[in-house]
Image (cartoon, rainbow, N blue to C red; front, side):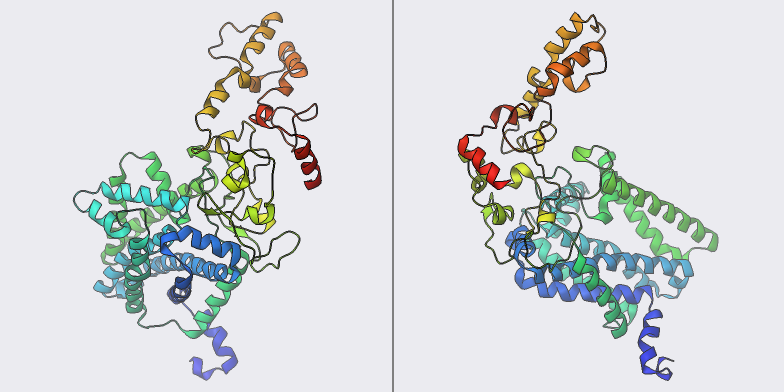
Length: 492
């Protein structure tokens, strides 16, 4: 039919007639092509640093990485939509039993293919995901530890995962796709349309790279629901069994009677809805250390909008600048902020970088992205745990300070309330300055001392003085001599 139409109309009409499976195949092909192109620039022994250098110095590699990422995500989405379309329309019954079995069994392989790509980032999120998956698989009787070693290897190195991702899993999925689609390559018009869309998206939205400075550690979006389930259940093997039951149900659906098929589809839809809801909780409601609070995904490893080929200007450093390495990581901050002086040897930027205290994104030379999530005054007690209190710094001191009278003001509060006749005889815990109310005694304290005390947040750079008080750790440990004060004034 297409050959009878004018040539100009064949392309658009052919694309409109493309099935979800056609689009999924084109996405897979695009993902495979960009993966091959990225191989020479990726060092599997230093996976995170390879990607960090792309983000800091190589916009071309960033573009290829973005295309690889988005085509992979959309391949998974369109594959699941295509599978459901088969079940919804009843066309799965026309697929040969052996082919349908291989299609269903390829789903966990496709998920692993996606997951192994996530692990190859080598960042904090990837390391945590690998540890969790290895622990869960290790609980499977007999074959579990062997399977974990086969998929991820015995060490923290990524060589085994890389081989599984680039060769084994890719070949398995490609063979199943070719067998199901009955063609070796997607149609040209579908390939062109999907490539155009993915490339346009890749120019303006990029996946980040997580670091150990962010307390929120998350897996890929399609496994956030599983992450929530594993957090709440003490029986990970039940979760694996449930996943296996879903695969069995998908395989058996074309052979069920009409009533059983409808009921099974409803159950699967409800399960998918619950899983999506849990994924939303993990994405938008999961905070530091598994706390529940509303937040948007704005960590260094989350998606970031922005034109990737932005020309260097007053707000972005040159992509050809040398990137210093601090604490084993590329520290993009120091490309712009080199030469900062006045700090002790243990706190010099050359020793610990900028992000160890101020957070932000060390993998970007664009000021807007690099400063996203930045901690302006790292000594404030509200964020001292993730800055001064890092494991390699003052981890044992911060909890002591938070419980001390320097922070709680407990003794002065108790005496002041006693003088005002407001003693709370039934109180079960010492008073705290952050809990001051509106009574006469508490108002008196706020007007006298409370606004100067340790827990008061400091919001501006500079020394502690009449107009800049509190500051947590900085209240005692931030000292400006004459030279430092002069440099700060010049910098600001």
